[in-house]
Length: 301
Image: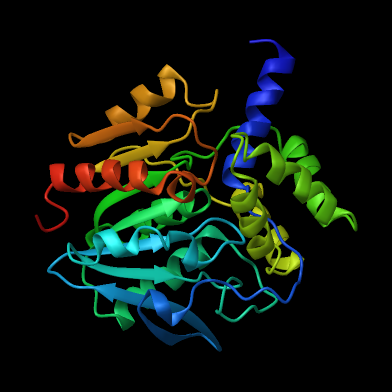
């Protein structure tokens, strides 16, 4: 593979994992009590916000992308509420959760999710992660596999991209810079390639821009810092389900890797969408997700 193609794919990997970014605005997140019942739980000296909805013997925990919020799963709540109990989390630093100036590592986020699960009396759940949410759920599986019924990766990478430390640092530096807002807006435009999604793009970006810059940079360092562990799933005893948007990084080798992880896997591609596929084509996404969950008995009929 020549250097130009390799660099392009690496940037695509980064954008998929880091597609959420931030600046401070007065936009109110959509993770409101309209989605369900709002809760706060203590996490150290801070509070984590989460929403519960639905009912059933099985639970699905939803983990949003970088700089996102629990409301990014708003299109999934109505169709799943009669099939499972739903828990939608605002990760620390995001949404209505507290935003301390701390290290936003994937293990920090994973511990926060486990704290929410304990508070919500969830013994075991299907974990669904979008973008950066995928590394988070992978770290949960490493920390507490007994708490995980299945892993659902939504346009997120199940293994940490391999790249030189200086290349990762160069990418992160663009978001430390004073002009990080403009750098972010350019990146966001590339993640909504389908005509007709401009209004959704603007809404998503306005919500992403509600997260402080230090949280954005901290989470980026948490994913790609040389001192941080990988999140690679090497083998799994639970179902591993993947729903992706078209992207060159989803190679046949990657698909084979996904299918090798567990005796129970399912891989789906939704055409004609960008990175926020669950918001861009919610009907098609929900149909695929429900079918996959039914296939492995993870939701009620």
